[in-house]
Amino acid sequence: MKTKLFLFAVLTASLFACRKENLRNPVLDCIGDVESTFISTGFCDPDNIPYFLCEVEDFGEIVLAEESKTFLPQYCEDIGSVLIFENATGEEITYRISSKDYTPLGIIYNKFESCPGDTTKFIGACLSTEALSITLDADDSWSQFIIRLNPQLDRSFDGSYGDFLSINNRIDSTAWGTTFEVIINQRNLDRAETANQEFYPNIQLNEEIYQNVYSHDLIHPLWESYKFYYTKNEGLIGFEDLDDVLWTLKE
Image 1: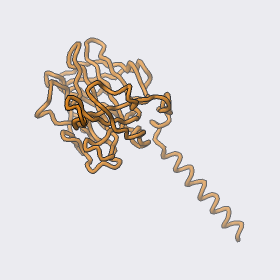
Image 2 (image 1 turned 90 degrees about the vertical axis):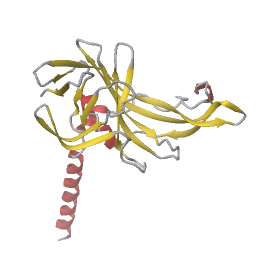
Image 3 (image 1 turned 120 degrees about the vertical axis):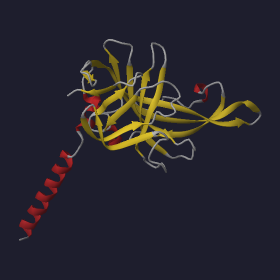
Image 4 (image 1 turned 30 degrees about the vertical axis):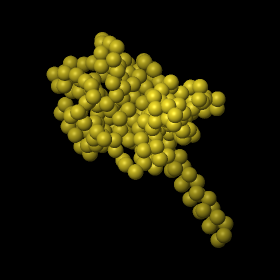
């Protein structure tokens, strides 16, 4: 009887382990590990801070949560892979994945606290972290998107942080903008969304219904920008361009 119970326990544990392994998101396997370590990066060294800061508070090293990495499924596509977006009239725009990066990142913030003895400079904050990103280039125009995941400090600089997804878009042949920035993992932040973050449980885009879509409010944009639509399972699924034309990812 004891032998049977022991075998049952072993089989149960094995089945549980297999199920747990099978539940691992495949995106994590294709991403792998960061390309280099934090050792000797020196992001927060005094010699590396901007001229307008007298000193920085070092908040140490924070890496992306494993769950957060699954928000960049298009990272698993090969460099050179094509993403085709279509508008309501059937016109198409082709973007290609031109680069994929998973590297250390240093972020230096301005806390806008005047320096003792020098009111022309400020005290800053520094975070050693990592960024996971892909770059999409349009075939027939200057349009380019950089989709990036990385941890960020809360601007209260109380030590809290979360994982953010942002999209930088080229506004014209020389200028860039970032208006899409959403919190995809709250970590220890006391808020779950950025100021202009939007979330749609269901939304219709060019006759298709999408679920659990992240987007952003453009009522008061700082500059001209695209409006993006993004899901955890598919990545970038659509955008409205500077002419307010909606383009959605073609199957």
